[in-house]
Length: 344
Image (cartoon, rainbow, N blue to C red; front, side, top):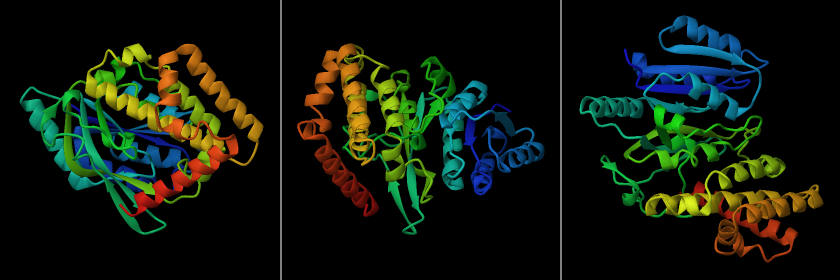
């Protein structure tokens, strides 16, 4: 049977929670391929992956590799994927099985009609352990629902909105055509994954279903504010990958809706990069140099892109401030955003 979806599950020391994730993916049955990428774990992750592969040999593959970080796991899954579409599901997250059934039915319908989009989009849900609550992030005011569309039909995004890895399902051959390879040993590479392939995704289909369940609440999560502030150099590395993926002139050769979204995405990620570089109280001089070097590299490479992000976007609101004041201002903004999200 043809595999409609390849699910890649990058897993590092995930023994305590990965079974919930994989069990929800198994609901797709033989129409799915599940690649569990054990990224050099030191706990029982490898044994659990092998047990699933032995029990479901036509569905699950267990791949063991030296530790390379989340991006390395995503790369390995994309390299091995045999499914028509490619979806990354982090080992501490899971999918709603009812929404998954609806997605598979839609893919079957589109395949039978001989018309498949380059990208499916669905909602994701923040599952918040610390407040025992959930917040749905949907795109009904950005995309047409239950119809094929191109970038000309995409409406503007607000600052707090963006496509995340959780919301996209790429056609595997289009993802490969984009040449997207994520850096290893680097957090926050999902931002690259949801940026670089976009010009290769010309037709889209949005389903207003709550598919992806994004678990929030572990202290060691990379998305906690403390960890992002600490790992600011990795955030800068990701920002550079995004900035240098397409020049200002290349972006302006894209359809208007695609160009508008990609500039929005750069704006958001640059703002976060400034926020978490200036927001730390340690090694202040090193942080200053790192941010100065980022702006300098961008200016040397692409003056127009530099002027846009430096003077005509959200970072321009704090660029005129002293470094420490930038940190205070952006941290307040981040706390406001997180509080706003919690109340959504």
